[in-house]
Image (cartoon, rainbow, N blue to C red; front, side, top):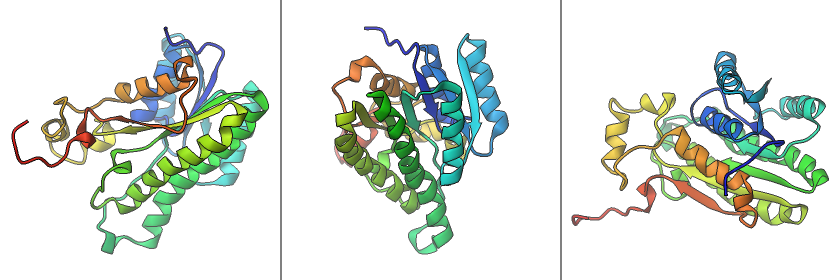
Length: 257
């Protein structure tokens, strides 16, 4: 069954680059009108929109920090004024700090938790109110491999993403009666602008420990989002799908595989 999202309106937070841009482009390619949210990277958001429109798609750019309830309210007001509905929400916006637990400041903790976890809550709550009135909707959260295993020096990021996975389950249980599904896509090592800065050879470093022997791309994550956003996942909710090439299914194993 081909994925067809014509007539659907999708909001992707943090869609100015990286995984968010890949998701926005994929949704648009399959017919959705895509609302491109960004916080500070306006030029990146415009590049995303240009790519969508260049391929014959439709989109709209809306600025808002997902850590701010008033800004989220403004964004949803603008969205509903323009389109009158929302069918798909992808909570992708996220930040991280690289610090050991004993060096982490309260400000570091608040910045990451407010953006990643509170932002997911606030956008989900606003979107679910619209979807409830429509009688249907799809909500997708972008998690992480740290939903499953500890990431040293990323304690606040790990806490936020682990919280998102549990939030996914509770939201799925509460919103199911309104025809709303809620699922989580948890990427592994994905090569984007930010991750390339983590190591001199990011792709080579992570490919060496990934069973499929390569790193992922934004398109890999986008395909999982498309599945959950489509009719193919009508009876799937409260789930987390790891898009990691088997990375986090692999134990520390001393023998050759």
